[in-house]
Length: 133
Image 1 (cartoon, rainbow, N blue to C red):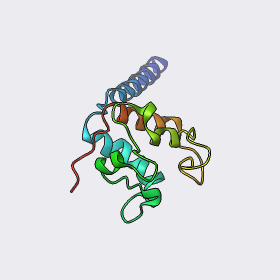
Image 2: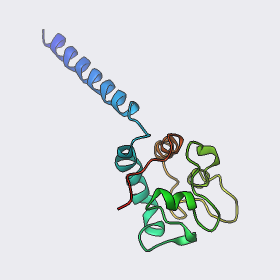
Image 3: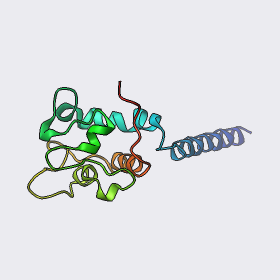
Image 4: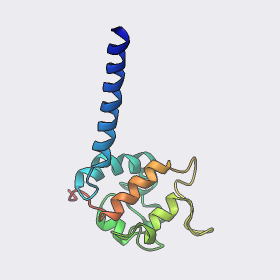
């Protein structure tokens, strides 16, 4: 009987895990909340130090959608709907131009594949951000 109960508990845990994955997979990247909960934490941890607030290294500020569309010294950072044409994606993939701008983040490790996919999904869905305050 214990083995059956343990098996059911294990099965319940597996089902719960699968449901959690489904909820994440079902997130709508076109909603401002996706940016707030998924993309902004990636930017805060890896980009904000050089490209947010008063810091505009390379002329790029990532605080608003308008700033990302305008981009920096090397042009627009994002092309909503097209991650393949977005310089930001090339740079975080470390597939950008060899000279300038440099792969991002410039020091430390490349972003995880999951974080890169999150940014790509957000751009593909239109790069929607909450309205600037």
